[in-house]
Image (cartoon, rainbow, N blue to C red; front, top):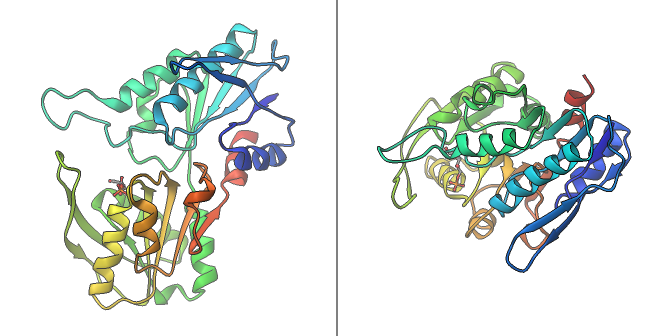
Length: 299
Ligand code: R5P
């Protein structure tokens, strides 16, 4: 088995190689001045199975195309079975036609991944519940929720004293699973609306009772708008112990500034997407998903 780590996520690559007990190799990636890329694998992959790690964080299109080129390079060099480990798959918020005339971004991303010749794909905490079934190749889905459950128990072992919060109705399935992991902990769902033209978010209401320490849990933080507004909403309701948790730290625009100034005590994310030094701050803690991924790949 050959393991190709993600050169832009060395920390997760190293941890995963260790968990899998495999030598860590990186593909050679050269970017030409016009943005085109040349990818080469230097390992002997002939008749060997391989695992490729690549998340589709920013820059999304570069990462997507690099992933396709790496898989293509392995195939052409004689590799046998390839598993693409893509912790964060971009474009999931575009999993259907919202307005007449639109394309379906997620379907295009899937076509690019599948078209590269990969045999199976693994991803973490999808935003779209349709993701697994949209792939025609075998798709393995895993979750960082158990990591969040452990963290929550560390902060407050008495699960009767906590409330789990989903910042929008789309996250209700996630929050119910997490509640199940925490002895049926209380949960609340917030109703959020997003303007499809401006992307602006508005919180209109909530369902359920806020009590104790509140943990807002989401699949991703992009601009930070959703999760920080949820924290503000909780604060207005008189909650003072607020923690934010999200699997994928996409972190674009003013996300860091918003999160730093948010009402949250702490913010937990995973290493599904690398966080550059300049985007790290004191109240941000990164949990690793290496062990969960390795468990899934070892089966
Ligand atoms: C949306 O439905 C997702 O679950 C996230 O809440 C959202 O994508 C986060 O984006 P942002 O941080 O830009 O609000």
